[in-house]
Length: 77
Image (cartoon, rainbow, N blue to C red; front, side):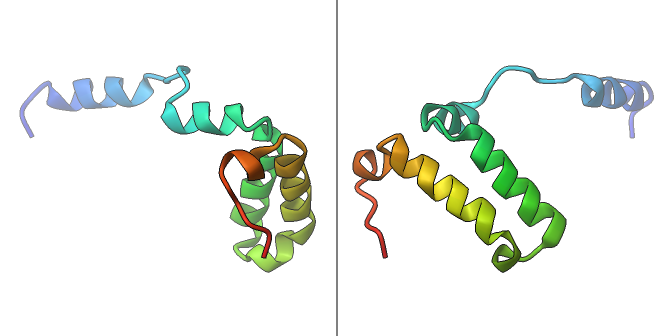
């Protein structure tokens, strides 16, 4: 590595990006960002979607309540 490059790389890693990216904007536009975060956190902790059924149901209800199933033409299976 080039001398001085290490400090620039370390400094770059310390920058915190508070601006929402396209993914964040899409999630927030659904009205279910909190429910999505809870579902994601559950999966991260348990590593098994089957263990997150209540979080998935809460997200699904929020999704329907905000009309996202119509907006995205989602079909209930």
